[in-house]
Figure (spheres, rainbow, N blue to C red):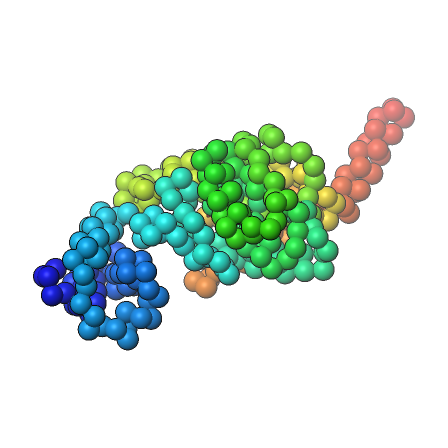
Length: 302
Ligand SMILES: C[S@@+](CC[C@H](N)C(=O)[O-])C[C@H]1O[C@@H](n2cnc3c(N)ncnc32)[C@H](O)[C@@H]1O
């Protein structure tokens, strides 16, 4: 970039530099330049003739080079829009993805008539799912993750987004190991990449993100299966588990037998089964107790 670089030419040059390494080079360039200048993206379009000061030009150039080496834009700007808020993010957490908003929307629909539900967002990372639910529906919220570092980030977000709600509970826990109590809703975006996915993506587009946020077991579904089965002990009767799925997750969610009752799959905009809903079903449990009692009785009679 030359010393007389304008906003317009800086964007064009950056987009050209990023065209081989990003799926959205122009958008990335706009976000990075608006971050550099501290102005909304819209201002860049109306102020294309503005000449960049040298310090901004150099800083923007550094950001573009980091992006060219595959670092996510969100780690460079330390922020990511998700649902109704902008979240703080850094290398300690997965960058929130738009498809995870389906977990929030589905949960809000299912719980719309429950006043002040108790909600556990497990594998919370930045806290984006649980905090987005709280943004719309008052609840008693617990955020849990195995990573103490991820929990630090979720605390930053809770403090920034809900400064007057000190009641959010944070738990460092390997799945449910340290979780006490039962909930009306458990939300999760668990690690769900398979061994094959890891080999394909982790040294490329995902290399900057925490590995324990990604790997879900050999098939990618082992972790989710554990989550579904262990969730039962932490749901109230009639309580829901809403979990995000990987690419093959829909088949496993529909076909396997679980401790919870399968309810539905929600597709994303690309038509991929993205979210699975399970419920702790009282009717099924009562039936199981009756069968147990009857089996016991018939054994005693023999
Ligand atoms: C795919 S990320 C999701 C983060 C966030 N919920 C989101 O949607 O952006 C998965 C998260 O699960 C956490 N995790 C991995 N293994 C875990 C375990 N055994 N118990 C609890 N959390 C775990 C990771 O630290 C990571 O923050």
